[in-house]
Picture 1 (spheres, rainbow, N blue to C red):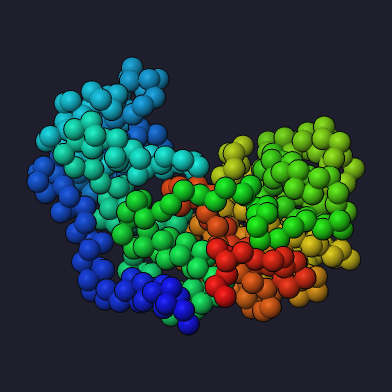
Picture 2: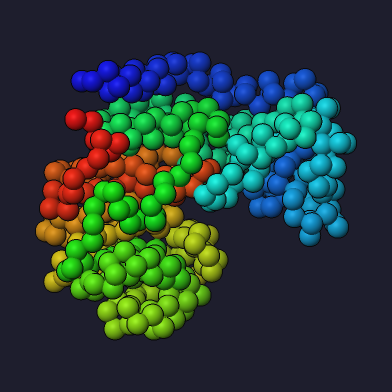
Length: 404
């Protein structure tokens, strides 16, 4: 083991070695310690859905906020949930010295993000800025889980799986990324994360290249944006593709993309279904956005099928999944096709906290000889992708990817 590999291993043990009681104390006290100098007075930066959800959770527990701060001028003209909304500069002028600013703008962006917002507020004169995660840890019943956010004590509870997944990733880059995202989940510190990868998401040129007989499976195809990028990646040279999208509005946009792009027309089978472990019907929240998802409270009912059924008689070479948390079930429903075809995989591992370690372990069971890599595509923890590269797809890896 090289010294750098030893250092990464020691960093892993340091992160997991804090002790459960210490982690529980920190997750329950982080917000109170930040708010205590201000007598609990706070301003929520971000008057959108996340900020309003935080306020509702706070009020359900007997608390409240002074105001919202928001960059959107459309929000300044009226109150949101009974609170005034101020431009950030005005909010800092009014409250920057006597209230804690809680940053609650959490979007999938490639640059900036929450860490940049916190730095900007400090530069404006804010005395103290805290991430929304600390407030969610204080009121977990109302606010968690929320995508990758959950209680950090649950990371410690899963320490065995966390270690085993770490050992699956190839080389210093993937392991270092894993450690950054692990620290991110344990501390809520958005400064842990670096800028995202520069390659197109799902098509990492430095990991593997397209094949002339490529058959691509796009689970969660949205409006066809990934299919268009796939056509760019292959330079239009591929055998075919299957695109699955359950949201009716998204599916209509997907069909339009396929019909109007000559590289895709006649070569893509678009299916208006969800994907899972078995054939069934499911309730689905259709938001006409990338976040449409299976949900017990969804407003529509959709058909769900396993990939083993949808791909019967077909040999896919590359499967991508970005399906809002349904990845584990969908991999189970693809067990036969994975063992038969040995495709490359791009699986999102950020929809639940435990997916970052559980999904690589699940992938290894299905593809025991594949090499696993981890790449981020957004600064706030969104769009973290685990790639599985079978031996037949290997290229000459650079030293930044693999320790020699």
